[in-house]
Picture 1 (cartoon, rainbow, N blue to C red):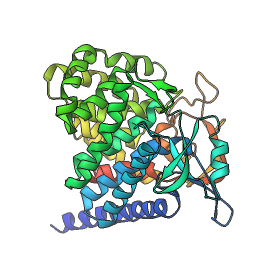
Picture 2: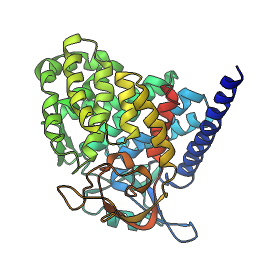
Picture 3: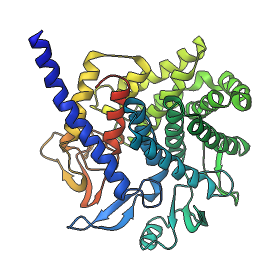
Length: 400
C-alpha cells in the first residue's frame, strides 16, 4: 500500500506542473494572441512588448484548434475560465462568418482603427481584402480562404458541440456549421466570396466533403441527413484515394496530415454503418501507418480517440508533451544540418528529430519531424495551441 501511495504521489507532481503550464499558455493567449477575437501571433521586442501581429492568414484554423482545446479543458475540469474562453472563440468564429456577407468564412479580421492594421494587411495583401463591420466596428477581413481553414473551424465547433452539454453553446455551434455548410453546398463545394470569386474547391476531396456532411447530419439531421447519405453512397469508397497519394511523400507539405487527422477524427467516429465505417477506418489506418513513428502527440491523441487505448502510444504521448515544454516559445532559427544525417533531400533527416530541437513554428505537429532547418529571427511568439490541444485531449481521454 505504501509503494502504491508513493507511486501515485510521484505521478501527481508532473501532472500538476503540466496543468500549470497549460493554464499559463491559455492565459497568455487571452492576453496577447486574440487582439480581434481570433488567434494571431505577436511580434515581440527584446522587452517582450507587442509591436505587431502576424499569421493572420491562418487565424481561422488555429482559432478552431484553440476552441477545441478549451472545450476539452472545460469538459475535463469544469473550470469556468475555460467556458469563458470557449465562448470567446465561438464569438471570434462567428465574426469570421458574419463579416463576409454570404456565410462563407474569412481567414481573419482586423479592426481598421488598430495601430497594427497596416502591417497585418500588408502581409496579407496577396489575399483578397474586404471591408465590413466586426462587433459593431469598421474592420477589414482577409479572404481567398482555403480548405484547411474550414476543416479547422468545423473541428473546433464540432468538438464543442460534442463535449460541452450547454444547450446554448450547442445551438450556436450548430447554427454556425449549418450556415457554412449550406453555403458550400449552394456553391457546389466551391469556396466563394460574395462577389462570386472562387478561392478553392473541395471537388477532389471526398474525405473532407464527407466529414463536413457527417458533422452536419449529426447536428442537423433534418437538413443534412439525406445529403450525407447520398454523398456517402457516391463517394464513401473513395476516401482512401487522396490519403494513398499523400502518404507517398511523408515529408513535404506535412500540414496535409493535420487536415487528414482532423477529418478522420469525426468521420470515423460518427459513422454507424458497418460498411462505410470500414472504408473510412481503412483509409485512416493507411494514414496512421505513415505517422505512427513520427513522434507526434497531436496525431497520437487523434488515434486514441479513434482506435482506443494503447499503452506504448499513450506513454509516448506523455513523454512528447513533456518534451514540448522544453521548446522555446519564439521562432528562433534552427539549423541541424551536420547534427543529423540527411536522406533523399537536403532538408530532410533520416529519422524524426527530437521534439525539443525541432524547427520553431506556429503548430509543431503540422511540421515535418524530419525538417533539418527553418524558423525565423526569434521575434514571433507562438500561441502554444500545439501544447494545450493534445494536453487537454489527453486529460479528456484519460491518457493523463
